[in-house]
Length: 451
Image (cartoon, rainbow, N blue to C red; front, top):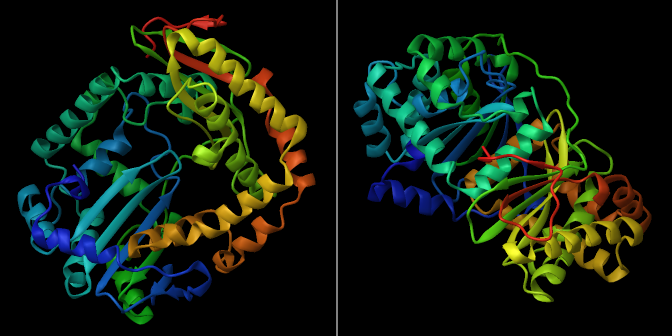
C-alpha cells in the first residue's frame, strides 16, 4: 500500500499542512531547466519561503502493457515498491518514512508509471535515499506482496457492487476491445494470483529506464542541489527501458446504447465519442466549448437543463479525456430510473444544440474568464506545482507554456467554437452505457451482470 494512504503521524500532518501554503501565480513562476552532471533533466520552480519540497516523476510508457496472463502487474508493483527496499524490510521502510514525515508513493497508469515524493527540506537526504532504494533495490518479499495483492483483490470485489464502476468498465471495454485502454489496470482475481515476486523484479528492471524518465520539482531546493539529487535517485537505473509501445486507437461501439441491468434506484449514464488529444490545435477551443456544455458545474448547459429546470439529476457533467493514444469527449450523471429516457434525450439535445449553434458571446466571454482566472488556484502547493510542471513536460508544451496559456484561451473565437463543436459533437454516434433499470430507453445491447 502506498505510504500516501497510511495513517499520518503529527509530524507527517505538519509537513502536509506546510506544503499547502505555497501559491505562485502561473505568470510569476520562474521555471528552471536543470540538467544533472549525469545528464538527467528536470524542471524546477525554486521557492525557499517554506522548507518543503516536492518531486514528481514519470516513466513514460512504463506499465502500459502487462504480460499475457499477468494483468495487474504494474498496479501491484506500484503498491509494493515502498513495502521494503535495500536493507529495510516493510516495517522498517515504512517506519523511516513515517518518522521523517516523508510521503513516497507510486501510481500505475495506462500511459506511464509515476512516482511522488514530498519531504521537509532538512529530511531530504533521507527522502532521496528511500526513493532511490524503492526503485533500485525493492525487496518484493512474499508476505508484503500477498498483503498488497489481497488489498487490490478486495478493491476489485468491492467495485463490482458500484454501478459507476460497472459503467466505466463496460464503456472502456466496449470502446477499446483488445487494447490496453480497454483492460482493467488492476487485472483480475485470477491474473493477480499468478504474479510472483520475480515478475515484479523483472518489471522494475525492464520498465524503469532513464530514457523514458520525466522529472519535475518544486520548493526549497537550489538547482545545483537538485542536479545532484537527480543523479543520486535515478542515476543507478538502466539507461534504456524495454517498454512495449501501444498503438493509437479510435473508440469503437459508436452509436450503441448498452444496458447493464442492476436492481438500483437510479440509472448511471455514461456517454462518449472521439475527442481531442492535448497536442491538437483545437484543444483550447474544445476546452472553452466543454466548459459551457457541461464542465462549468452549475453554470453549464447540461446542469441547467437536466438538474435546474427539470430536477432529473443531482449532477450531470461533460469533460475531455486526452490520452497518449486516443481521446474522448464524455458526459456522465445519474437519474431516477423512471426518468432515464427523458434525461438522455435532453443530454443529446444539448449535444446537438452546441454542434449546431455554438456559444453566445456572453458564454464565450464567461468561459474565458473562468478558465484563465481559476487556473492559478490549481497551483496552490509545492506538489500541485510539481505535478503541473510534470504534465506540461509530458504534453510537450514547452517551458514557456504556463506564461502563454491565457493567451491561447483568449485567442479562441466563435468560429473556432463552431468548427470544433461540429467536429466533436454528434449525438447519433455517442457510445452510451447505462447501469440500472432505466425506463424509456431501448438499448441496442444488454449485458447481464454488467461486468
